[in-house]
Amino acid sequence: MKEKDQDKILKHDYDGIQEYDNDLPKWWVQIFWITGIFGVIYALYFHWPSTPTPAEDLAMKMEEIGKLRVVHAASQPSGAGSEDTLLTLVGNTEALKLGSEVYQGKCMPCHAAQGQGLVGPNLTDEYWIHGGTLPEIRQVIRKGVPEKGMLSWEPLLKREEIDAVSVYVWSLYGSNPPNPKAPQGEKGERK
Image 1 (cartoon, rainbow, N blue to C red):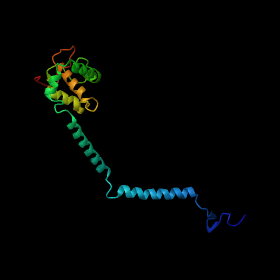
Image 2 (image 1 turned 45 degrees about the vertical axis):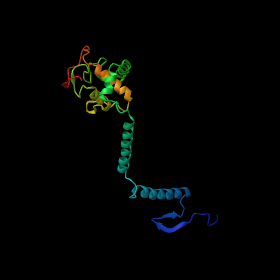
Image 3 (image 1 turned 90 degrees about the vertical axis):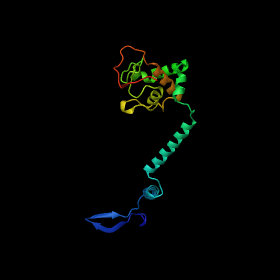
Image 4 (image 1 turned 180 degrees about the horizontal axis):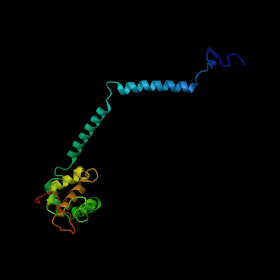
């Protein structure tokens, strides 16, 4: 073998151990340089003063969502969810039928089939925890009561479904179902 084809032994010797002067594999050197360059770019991008921090980025996105909510609310009909609008649905058989379907599919597990209450309160008596007017009932359905375990139905139901189930729940008053849950909340007038 020629001298240049053979590995060269370095001139230093420690405790009888000799070391060859081998180059690192090219793929290893390339990965080393790529990692170093990536680290510098990453540090400049994420730690440069003009780049928003994750908290600032979240605040900007939440602000955008707030603006979209305002636009969405402005696009809703002006009377959507008002007491007058809900009162027009009281005698509407289509709305009551839709409300009954939504109630049976979403509300029945907690409030029982006839509104007599299971986990949730009795919806047929004159006692209300969060108010018994149509707008108050609608508000509870829309926003929920997280501390009591009732979720917000606003993201899951259409506005028409929320209005219909609000009117349906309001229509359950005084229906006297069997085995009603004990009254909860304050006695209120039905308006």
